[in-house]
Image 1 (tube, helix red, strand yellow):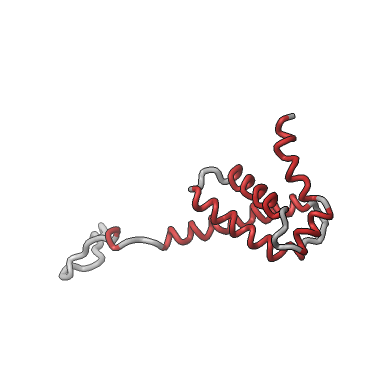
Image 2 (cartoon, rainbow, N blue to C red):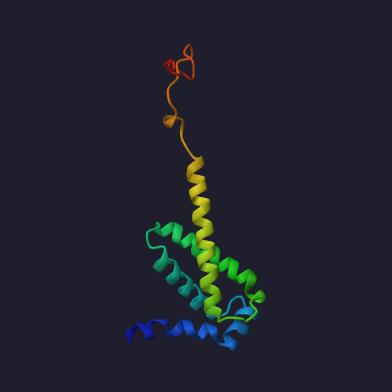
Length: 127
């Protein structure tokens, strides 16, 4: 029962007048509610991430929502649309982070190679 009260403020995002306010006014008070909802989703589903990365993901999602709120067609609830955007964008950011980490390395991690020695040495294969 208490959990219903936690989500109650976010259900107002599905109201037609709230959606109209979000579309027409970039400074609408409902953007704070939208931000809280996105933060909650990121925290709930990506809790193992560092706080700075979670905040970057939230900001990235909010920019994306702000740019594309006019394209929302109303085929679902607005909060459902936000959940989809949050999930997909967070996964994209995590994919980019993973690919970046795979490409990053320092020269300390490279093996030491004598200039006179061959870079590759293979043992002779038994006959």
